[in-house]
Image (cartoon, rainbow, N blue to C red; front, top):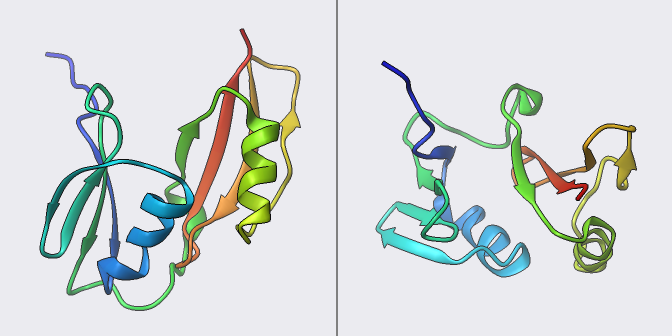
Length: 120
């Protein structure tokens, strides 16, 4: 039996610390919202879930353990847009010679994310 990704989650002490960043800054559409839990993303993609969890407190203490990748069709334009909105990038778009270009950044709680542009 094969497995496949159905969603990924980022838990927070308070969902509302993260939701404005993912919804308003990154522009991810909300597809499901309940008190303490939200799913973001296009209906055809596995969702990114954000939620309040009683065992999570403060900022991420090991943010490199789990990195969420978000695809964009124009990484340089998206990097400039997000940088202009105050997003903290760890690196600007980097072409390492492979099939993708990366740019790493943090959300408000220190979780690592990366923009990815697939070369076509």
